[in-house]
Amino acid sequence: MKDEQFMRVWNDGHDHFSADITRAIKWLAEPFRRMGEYMGPASAPGEDSFFTRAAARCGISPRRAR
Image (cartoon, rainbow, N blue to C red):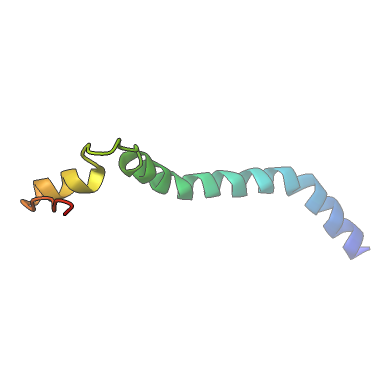
């Protein structure tokens, strides 16, 4: 009898529980998504990349290919 009650309660609340889990995962992943958007734009060859701009802000000059 307790198994049946447990399963009924589980089935009644499962949609809410799943929605909560999905919302939590999206909330936890959001900072990583924003960081990827900030760092991720692809640069054409010869253009500045995120790392080149960051190095320039720190006063480091980029190395040139030999």
